[in-house]
Image (cartoon, rainbow, N blue to C red; front, top):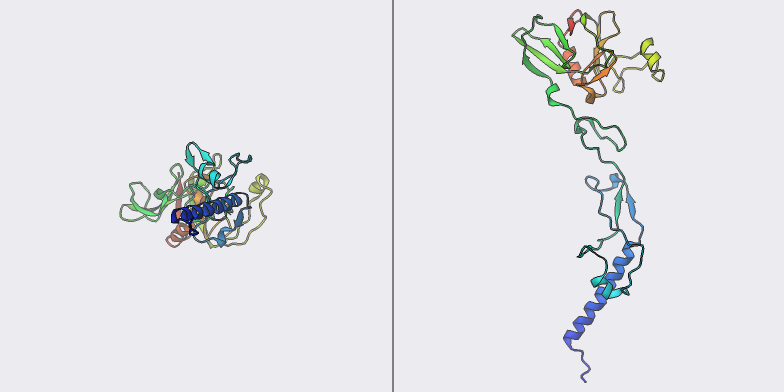
Length: 262
């Protein structure tokens, strides 16, 4: 017999050795602990990698090349072996339905509705009886109109009072404040004793960037640090706007402006 191995036998032996080693590596990978990384350490948006689970029972095929070929079948298909260690990314992704305009929302927080485009500031036709310069608050439809002098009005989306806190009437703007402080009235503190007694103006203040006080009442037209609430019944009687909208309105009206709430 020749001392030189036939090329076909040599190739077959090499493939058998390689496949057996690969099967052992795959089997070891299944029982290794997953590496956990924080999304800030991952490139791009965090993704959940597919996870393959190992069976609790050992196969009776003996392992090695035979098990590599015929083992681990489900529904007539081979499962794909894992490629490298499994990466489990910690939850960070915003929940579905949140508008990206308002920043990240973490898992476990209440879902925030997306901002409806119909509440964007826009010029519309106006056929009401109020004169130019008047503010008209349409509570049922959650719009605020600043009447213009050419048959149009600047329309803004607003948030209004919850059931039991809505009101109607005619007021005048009695004062204007930029980044106003907030002192909850006694009636509100009786309902919500957890509220602060006083809060300095700033981005975290619920009155937002601007406030226009309505007569001698406790009601205001003001901004909000919760812009996703525009278009809802949410306040204790105040008319709330997005900060960018209340800043725009603030610059267009003066103390003494007539405000009609319907």
